[in-house]
Length: 366
Image 1: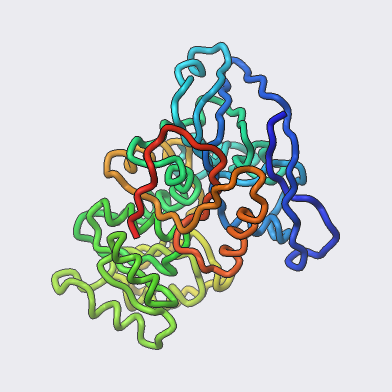
Image 2: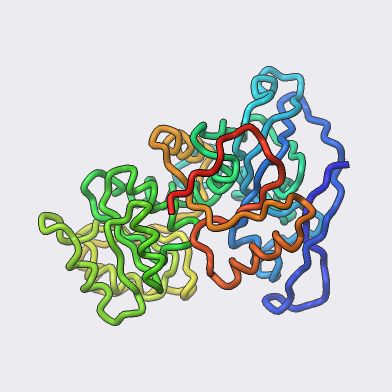
């Protein structure tokens, strides 16, 4: 029987417990007419996977394969024409269901259901074989290795919506600020905005991450721990465009207070996360400058297709921090990726390589 990695329940309070990984068997695939079976080559971690192990994520279900990001090869299909056309192709999987194309949010009454580890979606990518509806596939961009392609789906989709859809300012010559560079979403936002021709600047807690971001296309950056980091940023902007058009933020905290100084009138703060604080103050200077705060999370099936097409056209490379290449049984390697995430030491995505395929070899941009 095919194998997968899930989490095993042990006693412990939310935030204090750390569920161990567990290898499980999953049923032999029996695809329906419009379904395909994907042999997973690589799967990638997201912060939600760490939160699942810490019991800090809703809807946890033990015995469900972990992870939402995956790339692999279609090895079996149902009898329908929509499924059969995928046979033998290298694909990436749409990381969730319930959201087709409505720009305002998921159409499904139950909301957007992300793959991996919860009762909302029984599919996860940390397994040898995944059965999925053919409509949820996109062909993997030819320039990406399967490890790189697996690093793209969920963070890429989240970054695409926050940067391209919600900020609406990733355009040639516009100034974009991306806060807290180093995580998967922030890095994908960087490469998207840079590929679109924007002047991208970043913040980070250390200079090494800023230097790496510059290799990926950032114009420059500042260390947010310094008292006058906002003034430093403004001094780096082009003289003919001395303010930012948009901020892509995953931290929250005092970002609106800073935005009132950094953004042009009518500028956008696109917020995809709030790691510093679950609350933000909306200050009067931001009101007087007509600044807009736009919440953004995940993205639609249409946005996923648009994102993959952009990656293919512009030869975009997701940043990969580290790969555990020992396969489904490499518990030490997989656990070590989770440790990287716990310590926030990664710069880019953390990927598990499950099987070799005929895709290209990874091309490091760092």
